[in-house]
Image (cartoon, rainbow, N blue to C red):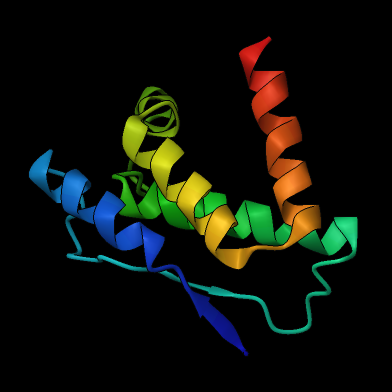
Length: 108
């Protein structure tokens, strides 16, 4: 598989569109996973970063967003749900572990 279509982003995009985001009409983002070994922590981290970037885009972040806008998108329910669903869809234990670590840090 050369790319993973994050179907989980579809719901997030619908919510983002309803909130006035998603100027490009994207409802799913393809996140490349080619050449990534998801059992390797470094590669799983790369995929988590790609998922995060795709969620940012689908949920309203753009290259024109201010730092405050980026922070708002990152903290939005759209972004949180999109990343969580994408990580669950990949179903890779190392990726899930990294995501759980990130959530634990964020909650402290």
